[in-house]
Image (cartoon, rainbow, N blue to C red):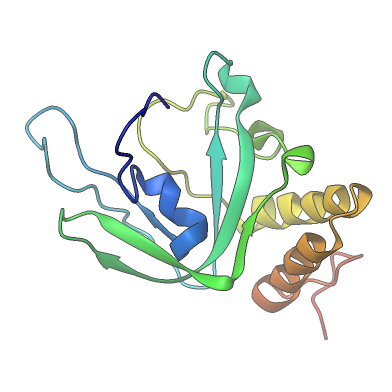
Length: 170
């Protein structure tokens, strides 16, 4: 937002999500750790990284999920920040007409929907599976069959779930 001239190749971490299947924890902009990269403590290959945002001038309760990838690996970048790498074939940008609200699937431990500081949350597999199932339904309802197929593949391959039941795949 606001860039008018000479836009850098990757002006922010978010710009790399779908082009490189990568996302970073960021760099501290203030305080004693200013300029030092942030770390993500628990990066687990095979788990889902869900990407959310709130549009400018909107309330936190309107935070939506705009994409995801299945984590393949991670590394520490030149700034000392954790960079999470996704499987390109399991990286999905959700079409605008099929984006779901994040807070319909997750609440803070105190029940609130406050995001606060930090760029990430740790979600249980139950929350992720519930999200993926609903996302697949909405994608199918809106005729995004290719995207719905990616979601189904993630459910089967990484969460061992049959598409229509709560039973593990056999």
